[in-house]
Image (tube, rainbow, N blue to C red; front, side, top):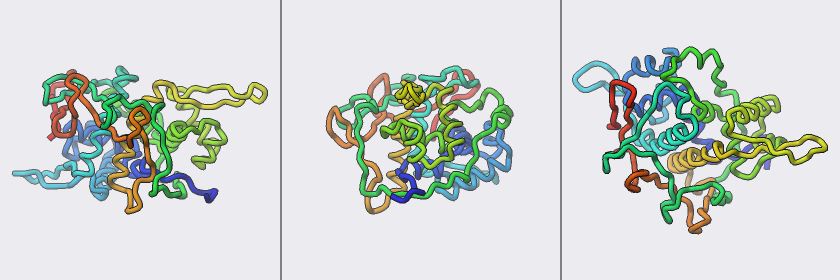
Amino acid sequence: MEVNTIRACSIWRALDVVGDVPVLLIMERAWLGARRFEEFVAQTRLARSVVSGRLSKLVEARIFSKEVAEGGHRQVYRLLPMGRELFPTALMILRWQHRWEPVRRGFNVRLVHRDCGHAMEPTPVCAHCNVEIDPRFVSWQPGPGLTQVTPDYQKRRKQTTAAIARRDASVMVDSVIELFGDRWATLIVRACFTGIYRYDDIQRDTLMATNILSDRIDRLLAQGILKPILYSAHRRRFEYRLTDKGRDLYCVLLALLKWGDTWFSDERGPPLLLTHNPCDHALEMKIECSECHQTVDFYNTSFELPNADNSLALV
């Protein structure tokens, strides 16, 4: 392996498209019903130039289409199949936020499974045995499509505190959006999920500059996603292990992996092969309604804002 390359799994490829805080904020508002440019600007509190640039990128990537609204002259942005297939990722992000940071933001999103009519939480299960997915019982091996890439970490910058503070509480960026909007931090979490825990090993796996790696580890520790485990008292060396909160991010990564496999794998096949150890089948995630245990998808689920004046269903 070349010393200037890192593993280019489908998570990496997915983050090349959506691994950006403004993009994730725009996608969030699209799930909640925003369609027009002015709605995205008003609801994300991003600069108009930022919204314009990110929407252009998402149209180019075939996440959105840009159309003239029926019966009028206003342009609207609609999710295309590639964008709609990010729905499991949106569900897993929302599930994590409900579990770990329910009061961090100024609004609450409720999910309704229209097939049974109940408010519900999405539950990620193995499609073969219907057991809820736990990353401690998943094994992986390199797939035929695994390649190495030279990382380009200059494409995106971490959101500054001042930029975040400009938004009001209704669009406060929570930890999960900050994490997946920062590829550096996401690569550290990916390393931990693949059994790489020590600082020097994470640095070799990610090729981050040491000051950036230290900053991101400190932030993940402060957010309660990682915890330090002393492994050398003589030299005060630590491993960085996922907490329960950090481990629960696995299904967000799994949804991104599936999306990346679907849209970016070449003829060689997926870069990673996952096995669900309890049933010994290739792992395929299915998302169930917590109330009726039937599959939830883009077409039978509504997002509602109980503390707002509107209730927005996906159409």
